[in-house]
Image (tube, rainbow, N blue to C red; front, side):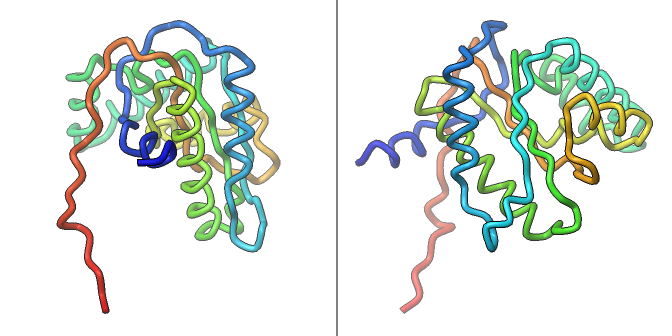
Length: 187
């Protein structure tokens, strides 16, 4: 198998990070891999924001947990609590990807492609990672959404798209077992 296919096969979603921060050089390389992602009509209706501010991350995590705790359906909250009560699993940093909501459908697809570039680049550089939609909970209530958007430097009018948590794994696990029955060929 070639190197790219090996990285894809080895990648897993890390849910237990060490506090050690990856170097700025590694984070820059990952961010540059992100912006090499294709986008519909080359609109690039996203931004790449590398967040190393632990205070900001703790505040966003607390806001997200508060939102989950207040939901009528407690299943997501209970699942996170069973995993240690941390939305960000102790990751020392993350990349937040805001998108232009006027291009919502295409921007979400492009955001997903960009985040996949992040996860594969990170894995190839020895950085554990997980795509984290839970970061969006910090923007869900509206109470602090504007504050977090400003603190993260979202362009005017942009909204949360997705994020990827990054760091070194405290514990590892094997990648998920792919279900080859999901593949079919026509013709």
